Length: 242
Length: 263
View 1 (cartoon, rainbow over the protein chains, first blue to last red):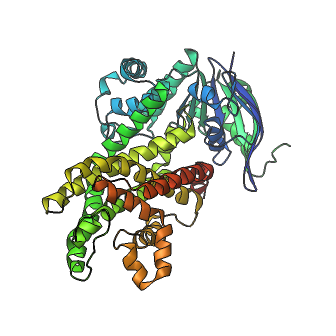
View 2 (cartoon, each protein chain N blue to C red):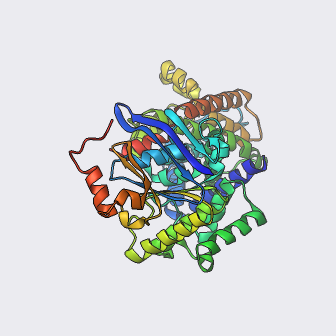
View 3 (spheres, each protein chain N blue to C red):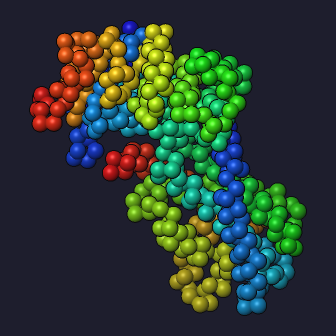
């Protein structure tokens, strides 16, 4: 079943073209890495997927809902972890999550149950009453992932979620999100770090606003390793195919 | 509809909790009008006599006259501050999070504005309490009647702040807003002097004051503080709120901060 379907999406900031005819889809239960160097257009694509920007050309389908025509139904099915932290540092983990639950219309017992379930899923239940400021970077990220799951989305979007984390935290978060994909979520994980990707993952390579490749990590790597394949695809001076 | 109210309540609770924690902002919001009330008004008391004009029944001291204007000033500063924060980088992260809510964007922005208004009402309440302690009081009914007036004037000023910070690129920081928006709005209003007094020195300035929406916010608050309703002021403030809100929703573009972060 298709979770996320991006079809012929283009977007420009004035004269500068950020995305050019981008198409790919992510099935439910799949971990899809959106791999691209800095400036490839990943953040623009995420802004379109979260409706921060309005789609110019092309369509984006979220669990069967067109984000331009049925934005509320689409947004209700998306969980997002942004690149920049979006937490209130001086509030407790639970208070942060309750705020988010409220934004999705959940309150009282319904919100409390959903928050508990999400925290337990991410192994954060015992930290629910700690102030966010007291958490380390890895736990803050985990908390943001838990937050993105409160309203039981079908699609999870993560925009470079491991930026600034140490190796152990990165590994733990990558493992957690792979487990979430196995449990049935469609996961889109934007990154420029190839070591976060497993051979069986889907990889979409985005470069200068265009999709260069869409397939499994193993296929993309060929015999030379994913890092090398990615670097040779996105090397400076290499022409982007029309 | 329940989801809408739940979201509104979540946004209002968050803004109030944040405000209570930000003691510096709370103090600044109070010190500014108190300096005007205690220092400025004391100096001008002798220079400015205020004759009997509605809603006052007798001659009043200058402190009594500027009390409503200073309530308006608190809301003006608060409205501009929260709207600037809403549009520019400080709040970008939390704005992005807010906008992932499946509720309509206009409702989310309205909820944000209302949350800011409630914060401003808390500030006004503490300010009025301190003023009362120094002997500057209004009739008891005024302390209740002023609440709805503060809600509508706060919404109007918040929507105005959102409109100008969404559409005027040059106003990128608070200093610009102080110089080009807050000060002209404050001084060209009935906050510090009645319009008839202004007319004595310049009929043109008086006409400008009479077109300033802030004048009507101040007059709405002034009459409400004496348990009276100034219908003209209410109509002006209400109409300006609707106009500014519609224009702000049209001009609000959350992608701007993103563009700025891209350089």
